[in-house]
Length: 224
Image 1 (spheres, one colour):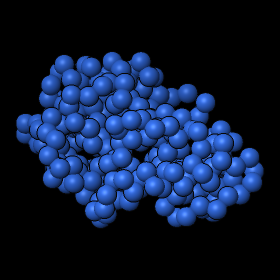
Image 2 (spheres, rainbow, N blue to C red):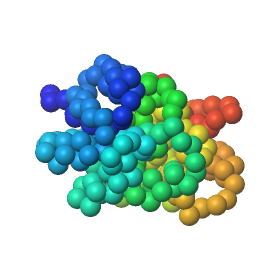
Image 3 (cartoon, helix red, strand yellow):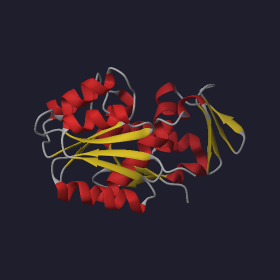
């Protein structure tokens, strides 16, 4: 099976090497470049790039401009990597169509988990049927079955379960869940997540145990 290609763009050689080493161990092919100008050249010259890991602060052409140019022609998944943790930057990233936004320093293992989650999420799950741990999730029909028995979920409960399933095994903060399921046009309390998780667990019955609480952070969906 052909390895998926990931383009890593960062002006710090040590950072590129760290990211590349962990991605290669996970069986990805990695192309690395040191600035935005090279990134654009390589992206438009290379077929089959599955995902881009893109630093913001770079010489010549910064990450924002790279993202803008690529989004004119492609929906390739983009993960922004930055030392800045300004909320305005993060909001701008998502407005430009960034799929994930990770602040430095970060755990390379978490980065790989995010890469895998983004690739799963963008691989056509939206219109397909996913089966995991006795749960069948049909995005097209907007229907969920537990051991082949349909259950009734609200729209947000369905979207929440979908997000959990796509990010199976990944620890998710309440804020990240809120931003991805409710989107940035929702300015309510992140504790609304707890209310919906409680209801979702109840409706999933014994499968509700797959949604694990991570104290002080949020939740993780993980099939035993």
